[in-house]
Length: 571
Image 1: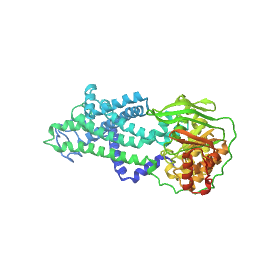
Image 2: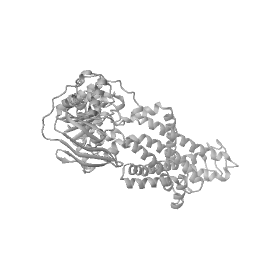
Image 3: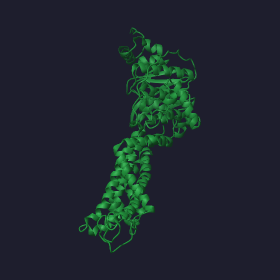
């Protein structure tokens, strides 16, 4: 189902959307009609018919003090008022969105300068800014639109910057970057669609405010000069006669008020209609599968991934401290530890996805190639192709504005050069391989329509789409119930074994890691304090902290047989 009809149906069901759409349609219809027909020439002066009341001598709304037909003036004025409103909104968006992108995603020093400039510009009242620009460049339609657009573009920049920073920090943007998506592609396909509802509201407000600002500028004499006709110009021309004939300003004032109301109501309705999360009900949770079967350890001697002396500092604080890890082809390494021990930061360092300002030293080699110090473009070729990641929270790791099939297909188009149709067909096959029901239909669903287990399967399909050599699974079962946890563990085990993928499994749960790992590395306060084969760590741990983790896992394990019995350790 295409998005266009769905948006229209959502607008029809929304009372505010209907009212706002009708008012805006009347405005647009009046502007188009004025291009080909008006009852009278709006600029024609008739000194014999001044100040006629409505419905007199063929004048629907009467005449003004010069005998000009009020209805014809309103029709002609709608054209310039609508053009200024649309032009102002377009200029504000063209100015505000790029400024917001630079302020949110640009180099730190450049972003700081842009933020300061935005704050300074906002300090000036928008009407005053528009008046100054109109006075400097002279009154005309495009001058008015440009002045209003520039004055309100900085407001768009400020709001858009906050939204971009919010979306950029979400898991699905991180997942897209981990799949090898370039910065511009991530902005175009994930960030901009997710801030579009907020931008629609902002632009609808600018359309409304532009109508009011144009009226204010024209009323104060800064608008388009005669013989141009706009609603603000009509108010300006009637100003000397308001006390004697107040009805002269009722019609243009009412037209401005109704257009402002229409833009506001339609903008709010469009925000809701264009957000797919508000158009559907979530699906029911899916069922379970068979538990995973542990595999014997790999004996491959050559290291596929080698992390040496990895140290990460954030704000001057060491959060990962001289970590050494190796991973052979087809091997499973469990990285365990409590929250805050540095597990996820270690994984993000491998992908080059650490937060801005993080300082990294050491070495990370994949297939013998050093990854530290590589440019973003070079890392994008590796992410999603040679190394991929499954994130912890299955809902936030998927883009809510993209259907799941397109998200599964994205790495295939990035790294395999498939056409859109080829990637879509392959996405159906991948959905089938990860055990999603009715894959041909499910790939057309939105993320919020799936259960937690289904969303995690989609995340696994995205990560394994290009058959990466290394798969990093960052606590992929934490947000799921026990039954679904077993399904996901079984799926990871089967697919990794089928594709020969090495697995770095991050968790705080030894009961989980015992089902999928060959070796275990225990982290605490940023350091690897113990490292060895799974059997030795489970039966003869050398660190008190590891023994405490084992005791906690036995006390809370759903399946008591998942862990071996405790062993007596003699001094």
